[in-house]
Image (cartoon, rainbow, N blue to C red):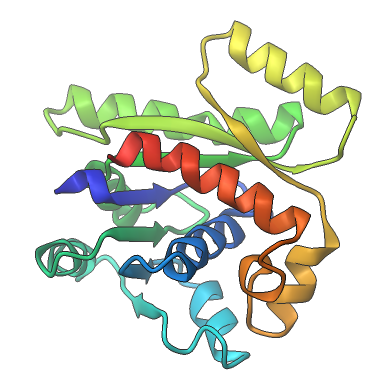
Length: 215
């Protein structure tokens, strides 16, 4: 069942973790799949995002914490939800370990900068530790480059450096686009605001690649 669960995790604030989580969920929801988003970040960014507008009101978003994260994930999977997305805290926490250990894919958002990458790479160490301690851990993990400026040298450099170092990246990326923030202001996502737009296409490419790991 865990192949239906993707956990987003990083220890760096401002990486676009919550944005990626909700945009993925909204894409699958818009495509007609059953979706549940578990907001396990104490900031409750996704629940706040949903509450700020009406279009996401019907999307199932659930708050969770260390006391109930495992049971909440299990309940969603037992109900046959096709895609379960978990947004975790932007710091080391037991709730993150639980979500990662139950995931089919751990997605690690990282901005294209050496400092951000060094911090995000801590999640690889967490996954290795989970497995060393006898936990199954996620089936797969991948880094996702976010806030990428089109044509920037640093983005190409970081992708090349990470690949050369053996860190697995998705081919898809999330660009630095104002459409993400504009949609969030209205409690929506680019997919729901402009389904035929360039940003919606970018999210679709990301979702398609994530689907390859979950199916």
